[in-house]
Each structure stands twice: as C-alpha cells, then as structure tokens.
Length: 448
Image (cartoon, rainbow, N blue to C red; front, side, top):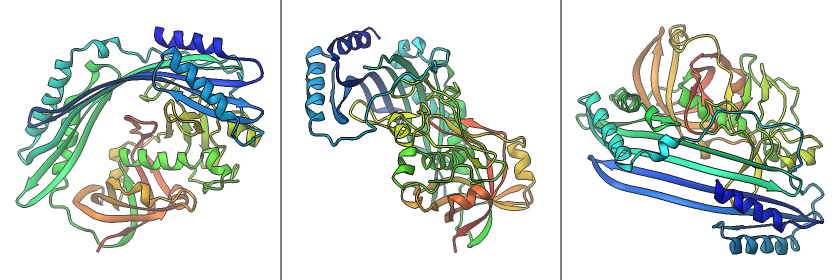
C-alpha cells in the first residue's frame, strides 16, 4: 500500500488546472499451482503493478498507461494521455467521476495476512492432498486432468481531479480438481472447487467430493429424446444464467441498442418470483469491494423487483448520457482498459423452498448439471438462448438416469417469465454472480 500511496501523491502533484484527470493504480500478485500424478506440473508466481491514466480536455479523451509505478514511467503515461487527448473526438459526456455524497460502506477486511504468509510448500501439499482425496472418493476415478491451487491479492487506488481518492484491497484463494471416472470404455469428467478468503478455510474435502460425484454420476449417460419439459438448473448453471441476464442490463449496451431490455423500464420482464439484485457490498462475494472502478461507493441496486424491470447499470459516462447518476457500477479491464457499467455482485433473491423439496415436488423434468457454448449460443440482443447441456432425468421427485449431448433452446425473455420455483440454496463462488437451484417450465430439449 505504501507504493500505491507514493504513486497517488505523485499523480496529484502532476494535475493541472483546466483538465480532468483520473488515475487507476494497481498492484497485484497471483499464484497458480498445477499438480498431475502428485507431481508439480507447473508453478507460477506473478507480481505486477501499474497505472492507467485518463485525461479529458475540452471533451476530448486521451488514455495511456504504464506497467510500473516508477515515477518516470508515470510521467510518460501522463504526457502520452495528454497528447492523445488532442486527437480524440469531442464528446459532451466525457469526463471523470464527481463525488456523489455516497460514502463507501464499512466492510470487514478483505485482506488476509495469513494467506500471504502461508509457505508455498503448504500450498503445493494442499493441491496434492486434493488429488489424493479425489482419487479415494470412488474406485471408478481413474485419474485427474489436474489438481490445482490458486490465489490472488490486489491493492488499488483511484484518484481524480474532482477530489476522489479511494483505496481497496482484497485477497482470496481457491482449489479445484478435474476428475476422470470410467467404466469399461466409457469415461466422464467432473469439476469440484472450494474457494475462501483465508488459506485455512479452503475445504478440499468438499472439492474432492464434488469432482468425484459429478464425474461418476454421469457414467452411463445417454442422449435423451427431444421434448418440451421443465428444466431445473443447478446453482452453477443458474450462476451463468444470472450473469447473462445481468449483463444485458448494462446501460452501455442499452444505449447502443444491443440489449433485449432497452426502453423497458417499468415493464414486467420476468416471473413475480424473481428479484435480481446487484450488491458488491455483500461480503459473501469474493469480488466484494467498497468502491467501484471510478472510486464511487459500492451500493446495492435492485435491477428487477418481483418481475418488474427497475433500471440499468450506469457508470459516470453512461449516466451523464442518460441524465441520471452513476449506480456505482463501473468495471475496468485492468490498467489499460476504460470503464464500462455492469454487475459486480449479482444474484436472484433466494426462495423459501429447499433444493430437496423442489426436486421432490416435480413429476417430470430435466436437472441440468452443466452447460456449454454460452458465448456462441446466447444472443443478448434478440434473447435467443441455445446451449449444450448434460444432466439427469427427474421422474416423480427422484433423480433418474444421466443424459448428455442435448441442447437447451428457448429465449431469455421466455425463461425469465416461465420460472416455476426459486430454491433457498443461494451459492457463492468465484466471480461476480451467485446461483441457486432454479426450475423453469416449458423449455425445448433437442436430443434424439
């Protein structure tokens, strides 16, 4: 943090009257360990730091960055941003964030000294133990594609010429396994993960059990017949669906005509069972931080309230363009990127029914364990939704045979409207979305 504070002080001294300037300063460290057959296949430790500079003069924006916090490099980045601004197109909405009177929430420390001080040998051994545990879960586990450990630590500062100066920091770690199960000539794979903010909180027993269970329970899977039926998304699948829906609510997409929800505020767009919340102050998210990537306070935003669309995600630029305030939703793609509005901690509010009771209440459905092809199969403009999937037949409240190589086809609009039930098992993992078991009526399944 001392290095960041020195960089902040230097940038402040470089600001001049008559221009708007913003600096995003970042220092981060990552560890990645990959184990195969109990041997270290790869071990990477990477540290980086840098600063992104944005200058706005007379409505013209210039951007530059430096991959170090060295003063000479920062000076060059500032000079380049100023020079680049001369060639930018005038934009009446360009500028840096202004204080909006909302104070960042008081959050518990997201920084773990325990994690960073844990010896590398213990982290390697944890990945090895994960492989051992996964293999022992079931005699049908033949091997692991890999057993992995990773961690991330970052400290950042955001400062601008309008008086914003704020800091954030966080650490988290994870372990995951890819198990391969087999019977005869058949093989299936399964993924299991545990993530935590402290090293001591990683649960490799859970990750091993999840990987082994997901691999072995798909043995004997067949391709189902084509039909229309209820689908039940497992939490990891709902997490992907939630990210898709929340992503379409970016004001940038709306303003460019690339969202199926453009000009629909106040309309009923989903089942009354659905309330979509984005809350990056919720410390159950590993992405929880007190400020957004423009230095404005993180806050809870309700995007869909019992089926009614309430609003979009705004950063400073899109907010000015729409004549509204930022929702504290600016996301930045590193020091070299500019901001764009979007979700940072989104989820559908959990229902009252348990996962077990939900499944038991169903006469006939398909339980979806995983989906694939999301990037190519989902259109955020039209809402078309077509993805590959695998899972299980549900008959009279019980899980039946495993099925694979089928396609789920519908539209985002229809799926939101056809939600039958939302379970109570809200599950948080790495990333900016959480999920729960979710039942959706009348979905097309393409198989045989």
